[in-house]
Length: 509
Ligand code: GLY
Ligand code: MN
Ligand code: MN
Image 1 (cartoon, rainbow, N blue to C red):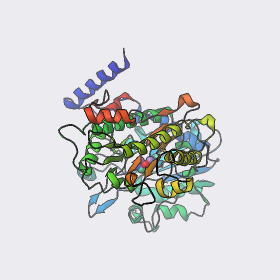
Image 2: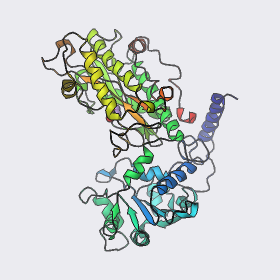
Image 3: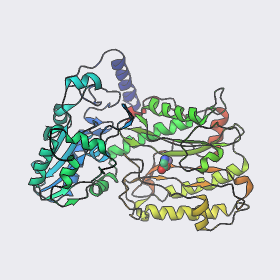
Image 4: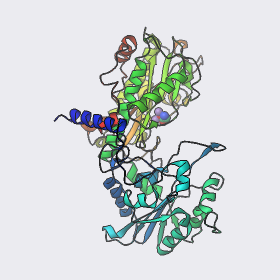
């Protein structure tokens, strides 16, 4: 049977289930599972969208393989953060803890204990300390996974109530020779976690201090995890591809609105439309506060006010992406906000950025031995050469970097938008790295620059999997139109790319 047919059958089953009969659940958990939310996690055996319980187990073993014997790695999860009073922000788990467990509840701790160098299952013990099931609390906050969920579903070898964290972690530390831990809970920044981990009547100023004051030498942990996170598994690439496809289609759809009866009048409505399309397509949420900028608003690289009108004679610039199963898409595009299409100066600058974007994507090839920094340098030179072909420009590389292209070519992408920052920009790129390629030009209102280019800001950003060779480079956002002819066709006819209206691309993973 065709894969697409299998998927659509599965889709209709899921729809029937979700509309008519709630699946029977034997265990109530604090986050989606295949059993309770099959429309989010369609594949049995996956703990989070597209990532299996086995993969989480293997990630922990790979981390343990980097640790010496008799060592311990500890990660404190995140707590809920409040914007004001009792109004909380959307919860964001610590991404290292999430990467190793798939666990999405606040106020939790994980530890990996590596006992010896035998390399077998007994050698590595996975500990989880989590909020217990509590009927009174669940009345207000909904179900929690509890110790039962951590053990049965998330496969912890040893579980404990988080209120026992201080003594539990202290005894693990006492047994270990080497401790890996990142002190992310700065005193001033993190009052809530201090008070949270204080309960149980202990005299410590929180678990963070218990660890730091343990008398053991504390080694940084995030560097070890970054090495793992920087090379994406086939499962991660599938999820990221889904996220990027959904986001690409959403952006195409927005472009297709330009000459319809309902064009966007404001930056805000376009921003919210994109967010809705990401979720409608199957993402959990948007990955970050987007940039939606009309005309010269795009000269501010991180313009996120998004509170202006969209003017007909200006370019619309967006930098936006969805997030699925924790993985981010990060896409920038610019298009004319009127069916007439690009003006000549807009087109000239756009072509310079586009050609640099395409040449840089071709460098995402392990066999060329490039680092992110090498690609950045290449991008500066490419923009400089192409700009100098336009009348009125005569720039050198340092003027390009200083005045016209003040940011970097890109960054690793994954669970974090700017993923694994501890990996140096000078490290050679290898197969499975996922990076953004995002050259841009922003021409200030300064008579140093030709008048008709002033006030134009363009960045073209794609998400790219580094290949072992040129043939194996994957542009995850290739579905998001960027050729001038395709953009003009979209904005003139309102014709979208095939499949743009498909819902729930997530089921395709
Ligand atoms: N959206 C932020 C960035 O492109 O890095
Ligand atoms: Mn971006
Ligand atoms: Mn980016």
